[in-house]
Image (tube, rainbow, N blue to C red; front, top):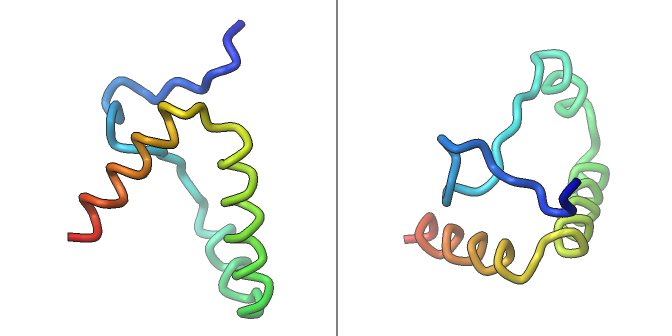
Length: 68
């Protein structure tokens, strides 16, 4: 088993992909701004801990392209 999460082939070099349900969206909409920001912070901390340097660089490049 590998420690690296591999993207689906159709998502190669595009970052992460996941699906959320309508119920999950509805629940998120009920969160306070503080809860939403905390969730974003916690997710960022988690990703920074599990990403390899190569994955982190790929994410940085994609973010830079999207910011244009």
